[in-house]
Length: 167
Image (cartoon, rainbow, N blue to C red; front, top):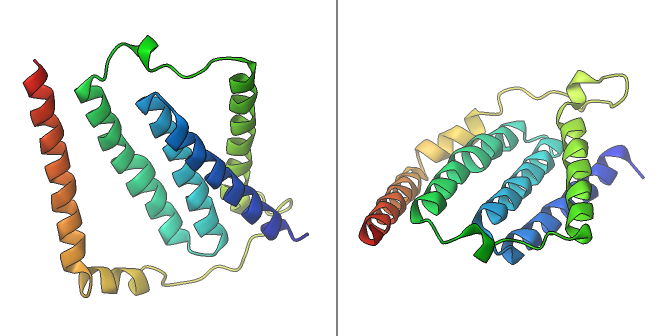
């Protein structure tokens, strides 16, 4: 099997498993961390498909900014005592956490493949990858982009209003 095909399927499975773990967690913070792992796995898939710009934007915007806002809202709402929403902490959970850690290390290996040219062959570099993405974003899809930013702002304001009512 080809090196890229193996890691493509590996990170596809990691993304699916992380998404399943995301929707099955009782703790919103644990769910958010699984969602971050899903975002990183998708970013690795984008990078492997030679869409480096989209991969980096996936990490910066979704795994970074959106998840910070999500955790801010979760912490602001204060959903109760941690023991009420705690996840199962048995041997299986520890083994799953170890497997997730190994998957994250494999993700790191794929992301830094340009740093290890002797071990992992890097795909050919492309030039001018920003223009084909930025031009439609700021011309054809500008209204949708702005509406999305206003919706995110409204969600944050709504979370603050809900949090103030409880006090």
